[in-house]
Length: 219
Image (cartoon, rainbow, N blue to C red):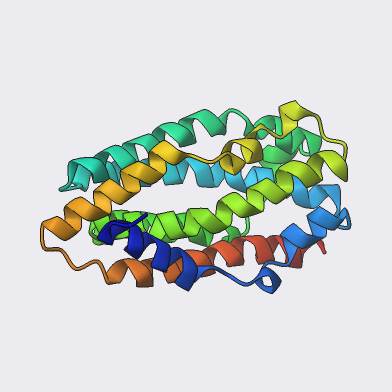
C-alpha cells in the first residue's frame, strides 16, 4: 500500500499488534496441551458473539457517511451470517452437544468484545471503526490460521468442524481494498481518524481478554 489510507492502516496494524506472549490459549491449542473442552467453549462463546457482531456491523453500515465504509461493514455482516452456521459442528467436536450448549453459562470476559463493538456502533464514527477492526482482524486472522492447523494436527478434528476458523484464516483481499477505500474517502472528506487507534487498542485488549478468559477457565 502506498496511499495515505494504506499507510494509516499499516501503521495501525503494526502499532496495535499484540505480542505472541499475550495470548495464553492459542499457543496451548497449537501445542495440543489445551483440553478439548476449551475448544468447545470457544465455539459456544462465539455462538453468542457472532450474532451480536453482525448486528453491530449492520448498524455501522447504516450510519456510515462514506460509501466504501457502508460496503465494508455490510460485507462483514454477510460474513457473520456465513460463519454462524459453522459453529455447532465445532462445538459438537469440542464436547458440547445441543443440551450442553443450552446449559452453558457464558463468561463475561469473553462477551466483553462484542459489548464494546456494540458501543462503537452507537458512539463512534464508522470510518474510525474501519481502522480499528482492520487492525484487530490482522491478529484474529493469525489466531484462526494457527487453530485451523492445530485442530486437525493435534486434535484430529475433521474439516467440517474447522469451517469457522478456516473462514477467518483465509485472506480477504477484497475486504482489504474496501477498508483502504473507506479510510481514503474519510481522509479526503477532512476527517481525522485518530480515535480509530484508540478504538483499535481497546478491541485488541478485549480480544486478548476473550482468549485469556477461556485460558483461565480451562488451562
